[in-house]
Image (cartoon, rainbow, N blue to C red; front, side, top):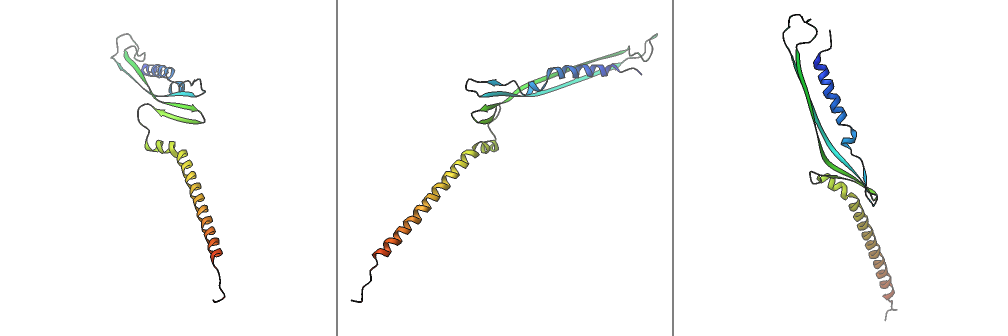
Length: 154
């Protein structure tokens, strides 16, 4: 049995979509700024296709397996939407989405280094205060011992 014509239509549509959409469409070419920061565009690609056909009754004089009475068509489409930019530079990598504010999780992740710095600073201050209190208490004890006098009972 010969190959059905609808298969050829679908293959043509899929090949055309494959030619239009590759990984460079999703993750764009990097662009470098004057300060060395690299900006990479990120896109969302959606595509679809359809194919259909119909066979008509036999015509006289045409062999039944030649598909001479077939009619069909196919079509496809693609949509490319920019969704974010990845910014690489100055010792960090950031994803800057275009369509929404950062989620609370992304916000927390971005603030973790600052939070750790502040906690470390707070710990150092508390340790320093504790050491000062202990030293002051030690000094007061020494002063108290120096001011105690003993008499011989008079």
